Length: 493
Image 1 (cartoon, rainbow, N blue to C red):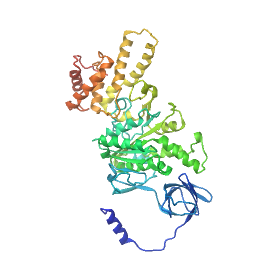
Image 2: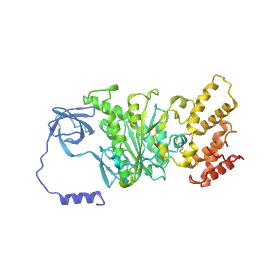
Image 3: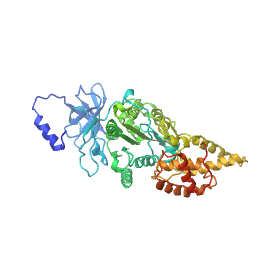
Image 4: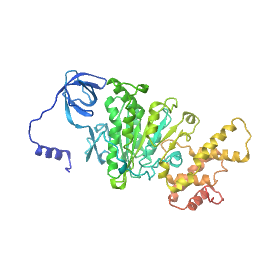
């Protein structure tokens, strides 16, 4: 393997031999809205690359009896009807490798920062089949997000596909950013894909990752709102290919698609311009297979195939909380679970506004650490029962003492689960507060006293050096000394 671009070029020139080359040449019939119709390419196939004489590039996206419909990847002002076009003869791909860490690129691999062209060691096609069943392994390792709710009640495993769904402005991207920030020193390479967002939002995301030191192990793939529709369509596939390269080398990766609602709308736009028959909500009939093919590439590989993993966090937007809309239901059926954010919870001050009843992780529990799983126990079910009991208190119903105690504990748990954005917490602290709650060490507190106690407990856990492998008795003594309680540990949770 040569070391530099100049050496690669020199090696190519040494092996170059002039010979007769025969290729087809087409002609642009019309161009507009990021679409070019080309005549005269009888052997063109889907996903073939096209070069235009003016320097533009396109990708074959639709075939008719006498015309080829291409989405434009690069467009110059000189691209007009009559411009010559020819097949490039190779699939669309992207350069991949460790040189992309800390970089900001577009879906074609072109740099969008000041770092120059990355000298990557590999190359992968954007469109590729997902790993076969025999190459996959069970999800068995946890991926910690730093969120109290997710790491304890809705756990995510490495290799899982977990959907973040909710209305705009409820904190879906904040949860994804928390997860990326929490991967620091966890040995996870991250890819964050921004699709069709305004430049101000893109800059804000970049600055946040840089401020929290997460850009060192993260690659950003950006196709902002002003980019060609073809680039916006390819953005998630480019991010997936980058993460897939590291997964195939035995590394653990996390890829965030922010967001696939915009991607679906963009695909609908391209399909309607290419005169494909519209289906439900005017989306083309193959939108399901497009997203399924993308998300099926996220998995956990077995040891014979390197043992790497790719965890996918697709983000999807709902309108007025309508989770049963076409695109959300498609993605819910494809993924391994969903985290649903609710506007009423957000307005009520419960942040992150995760609706624990509508959120589920179908396979994450298998990857959860045994100590965390034991403490979590029936906590989710008990919390949902508390929410039902609390509704009776709104009507002034008189409750038994045991019910009053259950409601009080539920309110304490609700205060514990509240968390500010961009403040991921270590998993050791998660275990500490669950031990404290399950052993009744917080029962005498008023709900408004909980935040102060949690801050003190977090400081004590950080200084203690305890790990998840320590005996439960050590954790109980730690939280007991921190909270000043004298009760002994319970035998069961």
